Image (cartoon, rainbow, N blue to C red; front, side, top):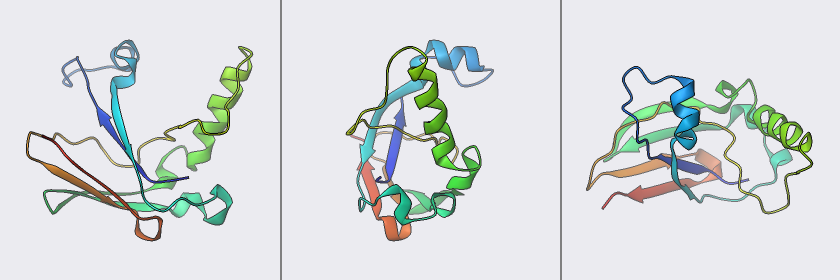
Length: 128
């Protein structure tokens, strides 16, 4: 398990956006940045994983992973069961984003985003 940032790439305006819009937009997934210090999922209490999210060295968001369905593994468990019903499975090496525990933020050309996950490390990206 490693910390990650999801880069949203929505083609639908955010105002009035519904879950139907999000699904039709392929969940607005644009890219992901992974990094930090890899750890085994049982090495930490995942509910207590937290992050401080900076944009241009200013704190924009903070969050705790328990905000993702009470435990980030709950969404992964749901996914595994859902695809198993269709004869598929999660495989070693698959990259799965368990869910965000911070709100999305707008970024613009020249912005730098840094997510500090404490002992799990950090992830940084710059938008050019």
